[in-house]
Length: 174
Ligand SMILES: [Mg+2]
Ligand SMILES: [Zn+2]
Image (cartoon, rainbow, N blue to C red; front, top):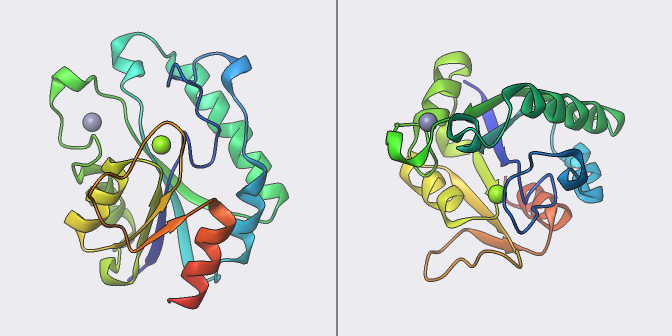
């Protein structure tokens, strides 16, 4: 079984622009705090999980999305952070798929590939959908504070100012 940490992309690893879709290079900015992910215990595998409805909406080129992920992976590697896989929901909201967070399809895909020990795994994200996904899947959750989204009355295991605080919390609560 794999202990996993599922990390949201936009707003968590990347700055999220107010338009909410990163579809041009001027909107692509990697957060400096990704370096803290290197402090996570090595027995945890890291995954990125991302809703990208713009792909099927026609607002985001698949090629561009793939290129931004390559850049992000290279930046993470420089800090010694390895991402096992990226799971993306490309569906438009109206398609009502089973993989758009907070639905659990992306986690089920990872589970098929890696046999996830859900009770020992985490989700880190900056939206309610990330936290609800964790809860529905039986995983622990960390909400990263954001100027764009609030947690409302949903309870995450921890609310962090940033990724570094999230990593610290995980290390103390393994
Ligand atoms: Mg996000
Ligand atoms: Zn989907």
